[in-house]
Image (cartoon, rainbow, N blue to C red):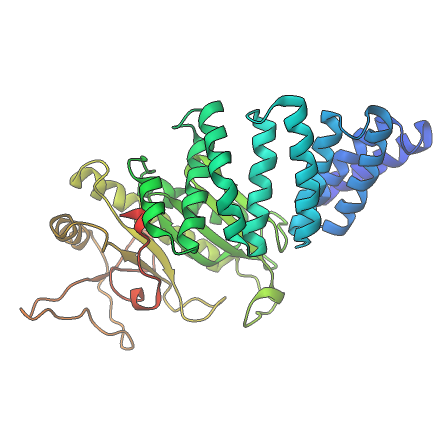
Length: 385
């Protein structure tokens, strides 16, 4: 929401406060809208203040356990989460979950939403073990309410598997995801490109696979959405989960006034071009046979290696499919790439080289490689096997 919208909402709150009083329902409703707008703009302290005032007004009008009041309390908890006040956020979400369970039952969508928010905070707090103990109940509730193949259920299952993977419980994670249909890799990449183009934020890190994508986006002066440090950007339809970081949270802070929108657009072009090509590859290999992960390859952020690179990890594919994938990608029209500081693909004992590097004409100055940079990336997760 734009600054103008925030200004208009603040003026409306002031008008209603003078006309009806600070705790009147009309004032409280407008104040809740103002708090949401401030939260979306990353003005977290102001949003916290307005949500607290809205909570007072709703509690006075409906009581502290009314569904309307609990919505306000849930939203306040999300602001505290973005402020990294983990314990405060968990306390409020626990209250919301308890009262929603009493009012609506344990499997109601609003109850499940509160439980999911709490588990997300636990993971971000750095306590995945506690989250892992609670995820089975949440997953069972989602399967009961939405069904096993609903987008919400799949998202919870992916999150649970990710937590198990973080705890080193990979066999359990593999069993959890086995048989679960993944999203087409090209669709995930196109979603990443769309997100980068929409936000105008450069990707500090990006890993995409058939089970979705994890994006960490860096703020800068050229962003197009006003997103601030600590906010999240999700596209549940394509399984894309993103978070926003500011200069202060980078190991090597960049110049905050640097306009990196052009850099972001170059990466979006690269991701989109690769997605379009991989759609053809998947069609040629057969539906569901494409098993790759795509990483943004870089040396130093926020300045991408020149030219920017994407690393395609296809080690998850069977040898026969990998060979076909390599032949298909080599057949793509491309500009020859000469990189003096990049080693060539390793040779096998037979003398044949594995891997290749191409530059797509549709995304100028963008390298797509199947080998360069993989040595500095984590090994493929068993969830993607």
